[in-house]
Length: 435
Image (cartoon, rainbow, N blue to C red; front, side, top):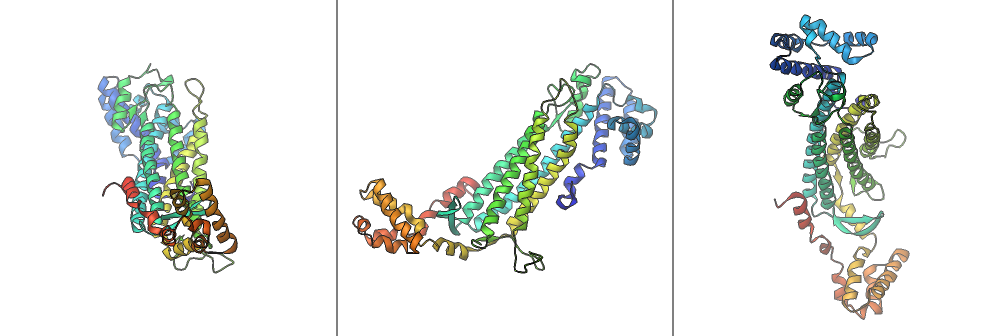
C-alpha cells in the first residue's frame, strides 16, 4: 500500500491492529461456543474476553515471537497467553491456523467491499447529477474515433451510470461470495471441534459457514471477488479514457478541473493535462493485474497448501486500497468536470453537415432509390465535403440525381439536430427510472 494512493478508512482494515483484533474475536467467539457446549469452563471464556478484550496487542512483541516460531498465528496465541494467563490453554481448541487466517481474511474483504459499495454510490450520485445537467447538451458521437451521429453529453454520462450500477451489483455479489467462515479444524473434518462452534462464530461475525472448507476456504470465492474488482477497475478506465480523449486540444469538449496554483508542466507553463484520469488508467491496470494471481490461487494441493498466502497478503490490501482510492478520485473528477457545450457545437459543425448523412440515405431509399444507389449518391457528395472542405447541404442541393428524388425543403429537413435526440427521455427512463 502506497500512501499516495491510499485512504485511511480502507487502509485501517488491513492494519496489524485490525487483523489481530479480528483474530482475537474469532478465538473468543469460538470459546463462547465451546463453553456453551460444555467443552471448556464458561469462566475461561469470560476471562479471555475480559483480559483480551481490554488489551492492546503489542505488535512488536508478536513480531519478536514470530522471529523464533516462524509462525504468525502461534506468535499471536503466545502473546495472547501472556495477556490472559492460565485460561489461555483453552484458546484455539480443535482449531487450525487457517480457521483464523481465512475467516479473518474474509471479514476484511467483506469490510472492504462495504467501503467500495459506498464509493460506487457516491460516484453514481455524481454521474446522475451531471447526466441530468447535460441531458440535452448535444455533442457528436464517435465510432472508431471518427465523427458519427449526434448524441448528448448527458447520454454519455447515463451510459457510465448504467455501467457503474452494474458494477455495484457485482460488488454486492462478490461480498456475498466471500462472506463465509471456516472453523473446521485440520483438513476441515471437524474431528476435534464441533460444527456448532463454526455456526456460532459465523453468526457473531456476520458470515455464513463454509459448506465444505477442507482446511481452507475454497479460493474460487476469492478469485471471483478479485475478478470483480478488476471489472470495476476496467469501468473506471473506460470513463477515464473517454475524458482524456475529450480533453485533447483538438477536441476540448470536457476537461478536468484545474485548480488555482496548479501547474501542468515543469517546462511549458501553458499546459493543463488530464493527469487525474491518466492516473486512474494506471491504477486500473494494477487492480486488473491482481485478478490473475487470485485465479491461480484456486488450484491448491489436496486439502491445503499455503501457495496462496503470500499472494493474498499483497493483493488483499493493494487491490482494495487502490480501487477505493480510484473510485473516490473518479467521483471528484466527475463532480468538478468542466464541460464546454460551445466546443461541442463547433466540433459538430466541423464536417459541414456530414453527421446527417444517414438521414439523407434513408430518405432517398424511401423515395424509391435502391440502398446501393442511395449510398453512392450520398457518399460521393460526402467525399467532396471531406476532400474539398465543401458544405454537405449545398452539395446535395446541387446534385441533380439527389434533387430528382428530394426537394430542397426535404433535404433541409434532414439536417435537424433535434431528430437525433428525440429518444433521450426514453434512454434516461431506462437508466434512472420514471422519476
